[in-house]
Length: 115
Image (cartoon, rainbow, N blue to C red; front, side, top):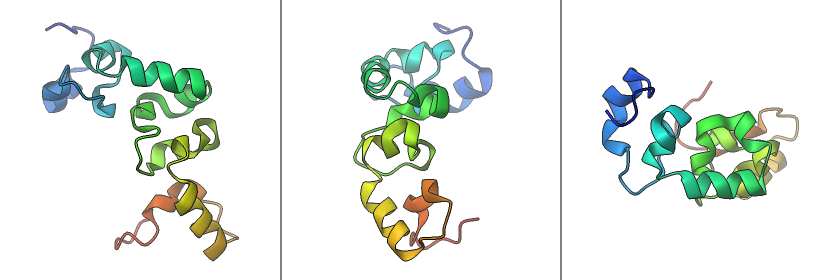
């Protein structure tokens, strides 16, 4: 095992993601070599652009700015998923101005009842 400190449950479920050439949030942990180094560039980019994002969102910084609104990084510290959530946040604020759960705007109208 190249990453002896990577949690065993992560390795059991996601070992195939390590060093697959794509930054995967599931293994974007220091103990897992930042997804076997796949996330090094993404992490550097996000940390430089949004320095408060990693402390707030952790390994999910792997999805910031990927063109899809992601709930874990739809927070101010990550500039609302690197701008990916701008449209869904705008719609949610217009439809439900009293709603305080802006982070979950990507779930609005997805055909599922979310808690």
